[in-house]
Length: 163
Image 1 (cartoon, rainbow, N blue to C red):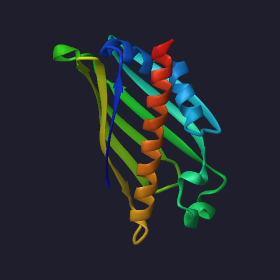
Image 2: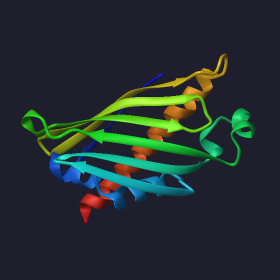
Image 3: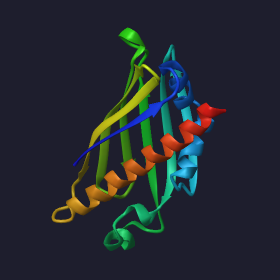
Image 4: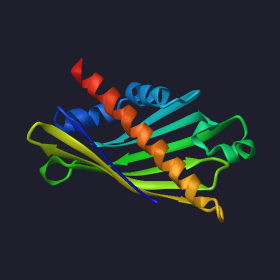
């Protein structure tokens, strides 16, 4: 199942990239997304950076019929690998989200591009669930979770940039 989302920020690409590479920002995003616990690691190489966020999430992100199978919480690992700025200053990343113990995989891309009033972050990707007959509802729940994370990032990002 495909997903797509955009966030418009009133700041330039480099300011938003610095925000996304900030451990405190990534940690606050995990907390607001509902993480019971989280750990963030940022690895920088030149102007490229990778943000790895490990979260213990409540099972409410899984359809109710499957919650008894996954236990009390889910271990989620999200990796955002941002490349150095390209031509015109645009940034690209690959995005991967793994949920331990749940046969779901989220892969995609993120892009930061300048606009007349700041920049836009665009998400695009795919959710796949390898569960016969029940893959569709699981994929739909995962897409809703991705959208929740994007909504949290938008809200938190706008607050962060307003300071």
